[in-house]
Amino acid sequence: MILTRLIILMIKRQEVDIINISPEHITNRFKYNNITLLKMSCCKIIGDNLNFCCAQVKEKFKDDLLIGTEHSKKIIPTCVTPINTIEEMSQDDKVQIVLNDPKFGMFALFKWHVKKGHKNEVLKKKNAFYCAHTFSLLAFLPIIVFFTQWFIYIGLIANEVREYDKGFCPNEATWEVKLIMFSVSMLYFVRSFFLWDNLTDRTRLNRMIPSIDFWVMMDTFQEFGFNLMVYLANLWIVFSNDSVQEMILNALAMEFLMNLDNEFEEMYFHYLPESAEDIYDNFFVTFQENKQKLAKRNKSCGFCCARYTFFIPFKILVVSLLVFPFFCLVMAVYGPICK
Image (cartoon, rainbow, N blue to C red):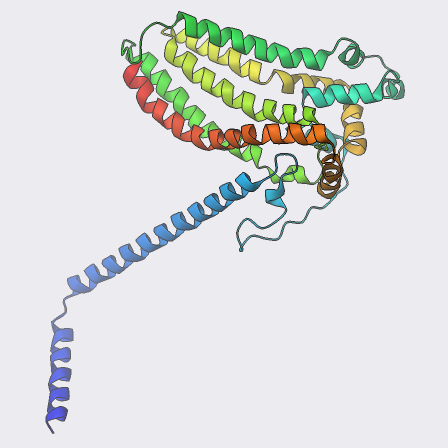
């Protein structure tokens, strides 16, 4: 009997509590629940993205510079299993693939010329003579472009460092110059993410230049390392110059210098797209073929020494690309304050 009375009293109290709930209380409770759900949803989205990002970075550190093994397996369990397919390509598609492959640079282009020798099969098929094709071999044009980029870069940076004498934080610039410093830093912050995407682009795994010699390693570092160094140099140039015109012109000059090798390839294949087609058909290989060629090449002592020599610089390059966005944010604060 006592237990029955207690149950009846509890039910009556619950009924009184329900009757006494106001509409405002219901509205506030509803808003509270919505805010809680929104916070949980945001936290889940951020957590999922950070987890995916960290997993990709982890795989990239395990990755082999020469073959790109991070795309041969799932980054996280929920990813789709990677499948490398070979599709029929038009001539324009082949040209773009050759141009976009970071491992195909000035050394790879010159090496293709050396293998082709003096036969000039491409020119004979077109019944045309192009100086860029002939003298790329005879006058070492791709190699000249490579050294020109580095010589101009070294000379410009050495000059900027020698002429700068204002100390660590002079804080002398006008607000317009400080605004440009902030804008350039944020622009490179945005671009820094595309640098990483270019390093991890999966589409190149369908067909690629075989990574079986020292020159491919050089072209790869030239593509990623030189671009990063140009961005760093531009931030320094903008910080060290007081004239708005000099800041913009020097920054544009460095951007032009960065794209010099890519523009050479574009102009070369514009006149001779058949060359890019020949490179794609006869020199580019599939992901599996690249692995097989690399396994055979690893038996060479010289190649193994070169590969291990580049191991640490490649990891430094990966770390630098990861740190660069944070460096840009630091410059966006430090630059305007101290310029």
